[in-house]
Amino acid sequence: MKITRSVRGFSKRFGWLIAELLFIFLGMYGAFLLERMHDEELDLLRKRQILHALIDEFKNYEEELSSASHSLDEGYGVPFFTAYSNGEKPFPRPIPFGGMGKVNTGIWEAMLQSGGIEVLEVEMIQKVQVFFKKLQDLLDLYSRFERLTENMILPEMDRSVAFFYQEKGSDLRDKYKWYVNSLFTVGMSLRELSVQASQTKGLLEQEFSQIEQKSKQENKVNSDAPNFLSSQSSSDIDDQCSSSELQVALKEGRDRDGNISHLMDQALEVLSVLNESLKVASTTFDEEFAVPFFTSYSEQAKPKPKPVKLKLLKEPLLERILLTQERLKKEISSENKILVFFDKCLDVNQIFNEFHNRTLSECSHNLENLYYEENSTVLRSEFEWYPSQMFSIGSELHVLCDQGVQIFNP
Image (cartoon, rainbow, N blue to C red; front, side, top):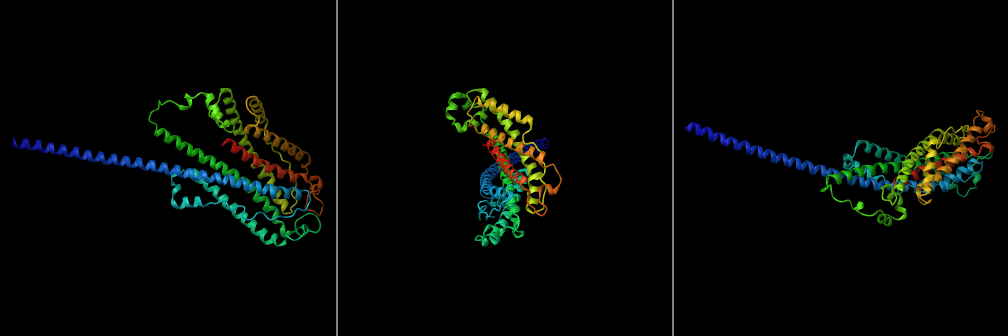
């Protein structure tokens, strides 16, 4: 009997011991889960803060680079190249010193040193890193251009324009030929980087939006809660939206007429395809035609004008633009940003087609003496239109790419 009671007592104590160990294990495991959830919440909060900071930074990059690009083109690039391609002798004006001084890359270096980018996706890190690498290359290129103009042009500002050119012809002296190539390269790089800043900002905003949606879903308490927007009449919402907000309102379906919303959705879809087409055409135009010609021409290498076998807006896309444009004009103001943008694209497309056709008819020959005099590196007068129109069209394409992205991502 004593042995039996002893065994029962041991079994009872052993059971309590197992229960106590299980309770401790469950408590520790629960604490571990809570700590892990807390860490995930902190990582999510940190990621939101980093994305928000980068979005604000890229907004500044987009504005500053676009402003610098327009200022350089309108004040220096277009006037100089237009005159130079026409055989005139424009003065090689120094570019504005400190023109790129506002662009700051410090935030990315700070994030790299602090380890803040660890919460970002690898693909996103690579895209941002590529942008900052190109931005640093541009800053270095701009600084070199500034130093050259400071050392070689500023001391000769009191000279006549003839001092910078050869005695015969309208070619720059060998000492100053760098000006043409540098001015073109800096202008081209500014336009490309401005577009890339806008695209990178869009990717960051998309990632931030996904995080916001995830956070709202996790914090949602009552899925059957009434929707405030749906409880309002569409006319009340329209009254609250100003004319400048019409595009966003229609995009979200907050309109008085469902047909308008459907048409706007179609317009945004066409705009998306148009933006991609402009981007491809602009890149192809630069890489295959503009950059090779201007680089060679600035080095006095007598490049032959090349037929531009490229279409800006192909027929299917052109038809969609015209059809969407016609339908929208019946429903909304002709001053709508998308309609204005469509009109601008159609105008540039017509100019591009005229340039395309003229290059096919006049620049298909392979004889150097057809385009240049025997002892000259300047195009004959009958071909001076080629570099002038090429530079103007290239600038217009970059501006359209920039505007299209801004309209699609207001």
